[in-house]
Length: 310
Image (cartoon, rainbow, N blue to C red; front, top):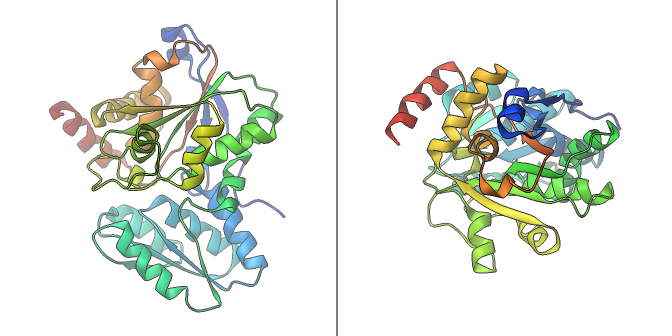
């Protein structure tokens, strides 16, 4: 089966490497055709669904998963319906429509969009495409670690952002299937969207009462069971950063690498830009630059103004 995602660059962040006296590496998932890592897992799930007979893909999403599903649906030549809440930015909505998917705006939050998606999937020809919680998604996301290992690149920790936990689950699966079960992961969330951190603190899954972070694409009120389970099986260090730190990381990354990423991605970058204590034991960190569709120059400028007031 030919993948819908592409191999992405592995770059050294030379300025940060010099600043921290480490070798800081970046897996540039922002360069995927969908603008984020999501095409790896969502694409694989869509491919397998269509191969099994699905003719209609239905994805409830805050934005990035939906756009990845739209890209996958277009590539596979099947009808695709993306359901987003009112919080999804207009530029993301336009991008989804432009690629040929049907777009429905439903509810004030993802849960309401999800309920509509589940109703639409009562049609046997329709396949429900969740944004993060499915084994095929984790299997697809794991390929980013496969690529790093295939390049014979050595790293001693992986840093990734966590929303619903699909990326984290894929990273851990990728480490385990490549004989790297001892390699730790730093799992990063923003304050106000830290459902994994809350679960680890409580010792059980927690549903956040509200998402208050600017990093809306990390806004899963309850992390996937598999992601939480991995915190008990793998060396995963959960870290939270502030919105201001995530935004500052986005601004500095734009200056350093001439690349725009969402605050959800800035959260992972902030671990290095802030030189957080959790990074101290490691010399060759690998940061997953997860990307994101919900950013452009105008949004980044607004974020810069907002960061000054936080």
